[in-house]
Length: 328
Image (cartoon, rainbow, N blue to C red; front, side):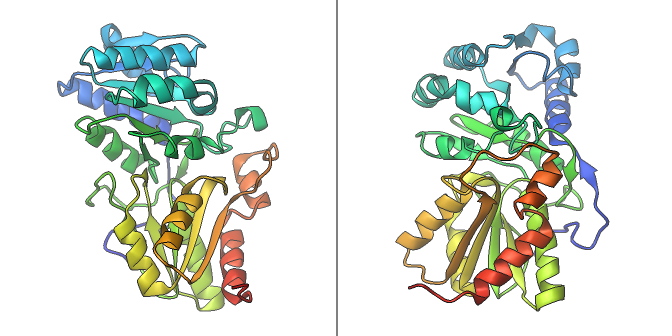
């Protein structure tokens, strides 16, 4: 096992990062942290963030269904010296507010934390409401830090640490409940530093967000069914990425796989591939994620199983990749 206590041998325990971020912001406000909270429509009030809105209305601003306006105004408040937490419906954050993120927030390098909820296919609204190309956009924007918490407890750590973090940040979380990766909150966390959650020397699975749990369970399948000992890495910070951890995994295992709830184009897999190839990596590598298509409509768990992103599917893909003949 790794150096942290995980739920590897536990029954599945669910928590909700969309509830957790609001609860953490409320705790911070109660403790005297000074920040502004912006939101659109009723997405925030319908979750625990509604308690923050009710208790501290003077610091909370609702922009209706106008995400670009919200993002631009958040940048303006930050330019006036405020630290701003801005909760935005994730699919509309990246697709509708790209200009404002790029020009108003990132170009000005302001302290806005964009909390993009409903990541991946968790919104449940089909292609128009999926959030599967956002990481590709965020990675290409200078000054922008991108963090994808593995579970609700880690989300709280990100929210609190981001308060003193300099520069703009995107925090990407899912809509509903998801399995806990960590058995408790008693572990060191630092934005930009990946965490080894499971040891192994046959290959490394680098993942981010909820798929860290799927990867951990896939590692269990690989051990029990194929005798393959997979190392699992929580690459919670997609940008800037912990390249020291990537080099360590590549050198010690020789085979690297990535798992994400995002298109295989431009996301975590692309970032890892770009770095490893330029570093001279010649081992086996495969990106596991959503294919280059508009994802099918359905319950998130069913969609991920359809694309082989459940633990069994991930284990099968990795086993096949390790056996496949090399083309180079």
